[in-house]
Length: 250
Length: 173
Image 1 (tube, rainbow over the protein chains, first blue to last red):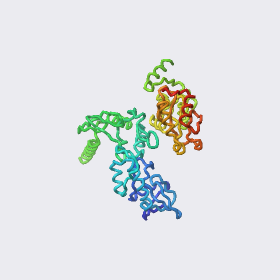
Image 2 (cartoon, chains in turn yellow, cyan):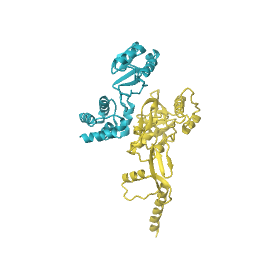
Image 3 (cartoon, chains in turn green, yellow):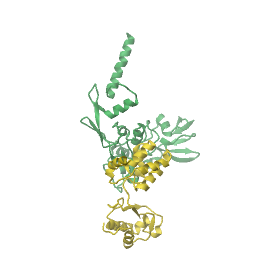
Image 4 (tube, one colour):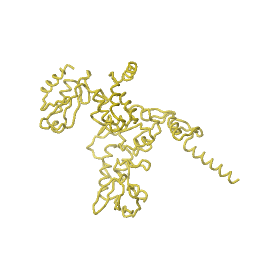
């Protein structure tokens, strides 16, 4: 099946999401709550596009819109731009001091309205990507709490979670860098909980929490894991490879 | 059994209420282990204890083998569920458009005067809770007050005082 995105003919499989097809063909659609590893959230709506089908136009959320038949897609029509501007304006009202959203404001030439009460400390756009990440790791330490204007992301009872291992996946996936990790004096603080940080055996840098290290190795069924940071692990792998090849050459 | 209960009560001292968790067990046995019954179970627990005790939540969590964060998310999402103990009489004051225009805020102020509670609070003796709701569908009778499913229409401050007195709140609190 073939679909046309912004005039470009693209191959597509039935049921594939529009955003994925566009990405594969080098067509840029802005996203906030989308990660290739955690697809299908569809919360931020930044990736809206227009779908032309049987002479009708429809606005759809491309990250969760499966292609069913050959259609024409437009990603940058005045209508879409206008709607994205509104989205950016509302996001900017929620997180007035956030750098990522500020950049979007600049890009879309949006001025946040003055009529909303704003919280300058708020950085979270409630896209739920962190909750999803925590779910995928099967820890489920955080979730959305409350509803409406009091909705937030937190651990149960705002207390240190029993399941949180301080891996920082939530902070890593956050599109607005709203989740802060404080690493200080060999301790990591996040979600009201403190963790012991581990030093890399080789370079001596703190790189992860003990809980995270143990959890990962348990999942991978690694019996005698070495405490190595990503960099040193890579170097070690390179060295190992070199050893193997050099023995071949001999 | 008694020892078990004492331990549970001790653990729940932070909730300032002695809660018998055996009823939660009873509720759980009534429902199959399917997640679609989750809300119904939480509602039953809420009805019995007037709130969701933490111990009950962890029992539900164990029963369904679901994360506590999911339960907490649910418990905070639904207005019908509460993590703080609710009073014996739940006073709901309509603050929808019609009631708001007809002075529901005066009624809220009056309750504050009479019982010293603001919306979301419970009196210290645990008898009255105050909530605001968005519309009760009886706009013609605005402002509307509901106390434990009993409706009072066209409420005025003096009428409200009578109603509260009828429920045993004499305004001394």
